[in-house]
Image (cartoon, rainbow, N blue to C red; front, side, top):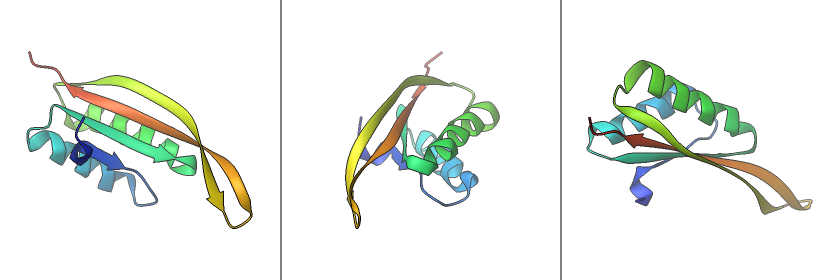
Length: 92
C-alpha cells in the first residue's frame, strides 16, 4: 500500500473525500485506503459507501481495520478510535 493512495478523512464535506477516492482509482491505483479517527469515522464510512455505490463499478471493499490510538491532548492522554477501509480494484 502506497501512502499516496490514502485518503485521510476529516471535517470537510463527504463529497470532497469521495472525489479524492475516485480520482485515485482513475489515476490507476489498484487500492485506496480511507482512514479516519474519532468523529470523522462515520464520514469515512459514508465516503466508502458513496464511492462504491455511485461511482466505482469494478471496486470492492477489502479489509476494514479498527483500532484505538492514544493521543496527547492539552488535558492529558486520551483514547481515540480509528478506522481504515481498504477499497480494491477487481480485475474482471
